Amino acid sequence: MISPLRFSPSTAVVTGSDSGIGRAVAVRLAESGLDVGITWHEDEEGAERTTRARERPPLSWTWT
Image (cartoon, rainbow, N blue to C red; front, top):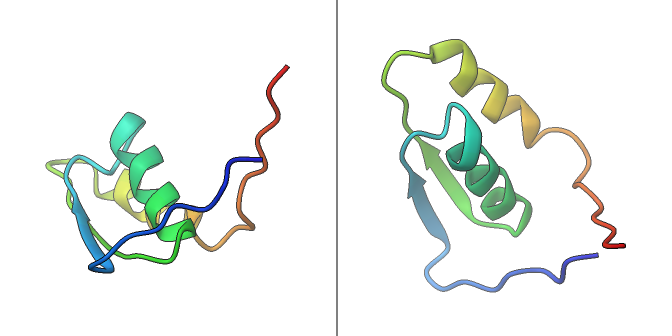
């Protein structure tokens, strides 16, 4: 499992967080306890999916 990230200050804004790398970064930062502001250009539904992704239990990673 990936160890928790530690940040100070505790707020981040992630651009392009409606999909792809931006979504992954936004979710990971939120799982680490940051308040995350997300932005998007056209895909409002994707931005809503990013918001809902944080409501799920954190992902568990296994490396083989």
